[in-house]
Length: 97
Image (cartoon, rainbow, N blue to C red; front, top):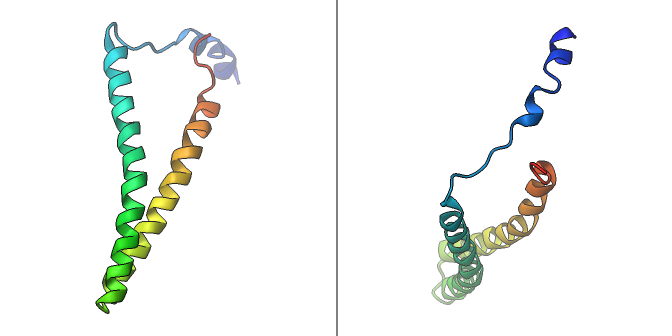
């Protein structure tokens, strides 16, 4: 109990800050990741549907299965892409204000 009371205000002053000049690189990297994800969300479903159609046409159940799996993975990835940033920002809060 004494330890908790003694260290209660100790961590209030800790405020992590990116090094000087790093914000440009971080924004560039974040932008590239977001654009890659957006492109993948457009390409993967199309390729998955094509794989399903070709698998059905040439009677290859494995190719059809891969197409369905790719479509489901893309759908789950879109849901996570839309929900995880909100969850993380709500957990982290506004940071140091």
